Length: 374
Figure 1: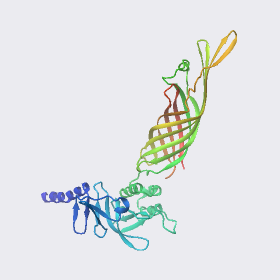
Figure 2 (figure 1 turned 90 degrees about the horizontal axis):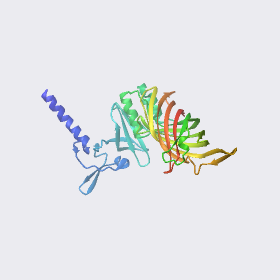
Figure 3 (figure 1 turned 120 degrees about the horizontal axis):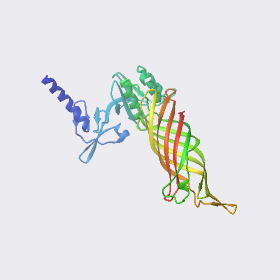
Figure 4 (figure 1 turned 180 degrees about the vertical axis):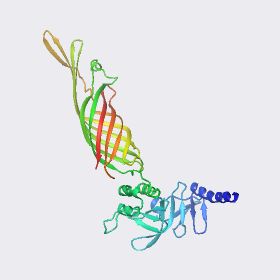
């Protein structure tokens, strides 16, 4: 038992040391704790570079079989087929398992390679020349023995993060929704209430009984995953229109406020969707900008003197500013229609403030939104 523990300890220690330091290995030795130079993707694919004193020494893939940086990146020497010959290069290992994913950056191209069960070693080009076969088609064929990643193979993008995520899931045969870029249409119904700011100077505005006014909204959205995760950057651009009319008798004076507002609004939100395979609850929060391109608002005072009605315009400046900024927070449910299309429903609250130090009417909004991606 003691001999077994000692043996395992001897085997594990070099692995831990390599994982915490720069290293390189040849056919006969491994050197740990060296000072590797990061030449980025292009040079790293051609050379293993080390700083020795004031000089940088370059080793080719024929001299070094593997090297790695302390941040976890590992490069292995492999023979690949180029346009007219076989060439030995360094491939960056992105995922290690029953199926291993490699990345190669050349002078004119970038490409990926898959090594499956240490037997199959194939290139994964973005599209095969003279044939209408994409990398997604190849991935669907290669991963066909795991139905859990069938939909993910149809949605994966041709970049390191996305492909690594897919191959990791394939190695574990993991059934989980795959993050991908979405865009589509939104429609909704919103109710807006005007709220006097604390700095407003008009004595009558604070005495009006402001209520929520309803109106429809329509617009577009984009939803972009953050680092191929369940978090995404969600942005919308939608149009809304509201009409307000309030009246109150104050000190024998009839006070009327009327406003017609048409606006373009741009919420920019961070969204989190729970990784359920069918219906996905989600929450989001962030900022919102509003441009009130039609902004007609008036405040009138009507009084009667000797049977004569006098109407005065009490508004010296606009009580609703053309540009507003605020925050939004919401939550809802995404319903899966197929591997690519989702229908979502959301309830969202927003608060908008005028971009000025002087008094204005702010907005409190509640929206019921539905949308579908194309």
